[in-house]
View 1 (cartoon, helix red, strand yellow):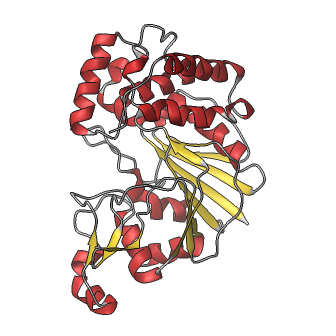
View 2: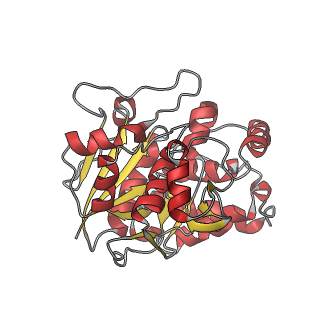
Length: 325
């Protein structure tokens, strides 16, 4: 069994070291290799060398990753098939990851070959594949999903787009699939294109994969998004700016909390002090998820990082925190 962990990282380069050590700790009992796909600028800020770690800063020898000039976003995942081919990545399993998914328990086992396994069960119906308003398959995303390389390679051969795509192959072949499945096929809560949405459709409609969930990770969301949108808070700011950003985030992305982002920046060492923060304004899930990480963080964090995690939790424990939305 060989696992290739794939993470595409556009922002928050100071979190890469934490991410790599967390993965190494979790996957320690397996035959694994970690691939970090990122920009050359991000790589300049980190210094990690490991036989089981490969950094990729060009999708192919002839191409470059490019940023959206309006948003700063890099559509890394559209290059995934080319990366697999040019860098000869050929494991038995792919572990699709985001930088802000943190394991608090170690890896246990792989599922059956035709079954996707996720270590962060999602509680909502966001972007599930639906048949006649019933879940046909949960949403596959870059969030601790372990998938057989055979399924992934067949999707590549099928010319699936792993990045953003406005019109999916379902839209191009809707009559065929709805006749095949005998009902209306849709994506729940769909508003626009998303990473791995077409691959998720492929797994549901062509592979008909099984599904396995076990909770071993938490989603400490927002560090990359906030770094991209509000770089001025990356190394510290005052409470007034925090409240302004939180107000903006709650309007645009209510599933994020700027206090979680500040906690992550502080743990990583970007912020040198966070005593002045009004931690009682954080949503309740911030304390809940950081406590989950704290169960085992001393096994993979540095002494300084672990100390900063405990410091944040001491502030959060003193306040009640707002109820989750």
